[in-house]
Length: 480
Image 1 (tube, rainbow, N blue to C red):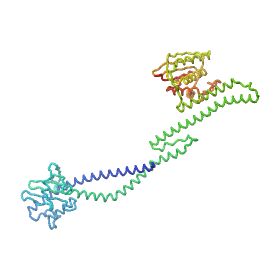
Image 2 (cartoon, helix red, strand yellow; image 1 turned 180 degrees about the vertical axis):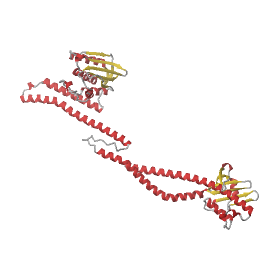
Image 3 (cartoon, one colour; image 1 turned 90 degrees about the horizontal axis):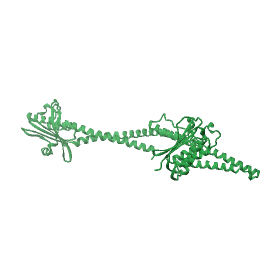
Image 4 (cartoon, rainbow, N blue to C red; image 1 turned 30 degrees about the vertical axis):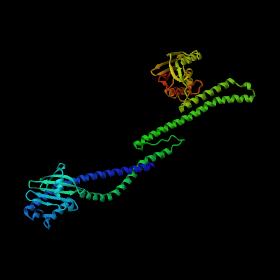
């Protein structure tokens, strides 16, 4: 199902459900109000019929003198029944029960076709409700109301008692509800098609407004190609929720663009690094072939270039494995103390001018790959040997710090700005020309060292310090 269709369907169902709830609640409220009005009418009318029949009892056949609206009626009782059916909103006299009894004369009237006295005798007085109303003269009228079932129909009845008489009047509730249902049905015949039309228009409006920003995003996304990742989606016209989505998408594009640029730069740098020794090898081999004198081959130089190529290839392989998260580790217990002692001893042998200060705790053991950890420390110390001011000294500290081993290597160097320090872990970055001073190197050493540290759940960072002081902190978790 298409997203547009799903939104449209959900909108239709939601609006329809809301309308259904509104109609149901309105019907319940209408019924409640109608019953309250019916109670008031019953209470008022039964007092009126009691007065009517008491006057009729006292005045003989001239009770209508006080009912001018019925002065032309041929039969007072018929007039009263007709008047009650209209005021109580029922269809016929069969939906009405009437009973009036005086203390002096007994039963004054009761409905035909039904034993009203028998019905009254079956009613439970405990279920009666009291209802207070006011008659035409403003006098308070207290009635007793009760629901009861007769001939499978629900009836609403009202009792009224005085010292001289009592009256009872009941109506079939279904007459009232049927009338309301009929009215509601006629209204719904008009309302439902109009409501459905409103539902469709409302759903179309909601769907269009929901889809519009998505279409705008799609058009903007189609403008992004693999050759042009610089295009960003605009946020200023988008809703707040889509601004979050657009910001996340733009951030992803920035990371993707940086990654593409890094890969492109890495490929170009790797090709450049491999090109130099290959060119040297080719030149020496071509020279020997042209001169047809194999003895002129400088095997040592060729061996150096092959070793350089091999070292670069190995570092590139390790970096690619680190990027893929597949750097293979052959874990074993490694004594960092012994490894640092061995490497610092080599440093002292390589330079007579180097002033080395070591503070290395004994028995610093971690679980790691011996070859890779040696590569890590060797890369770091080779950089120290190349770029430090030997006469000012190099400090190497190693100690256990909680659950990890910290190796702190500090040396003095030529002033180095923060902008340069940030780039030192970038691949093939060798620093500024004033730091190179004709020194060779691939620019992969520190980058590879950090990847090896991270592969061991550790890290290698540059500590903040003065521009003439360079400090590296290597953190590795201790063996558990």
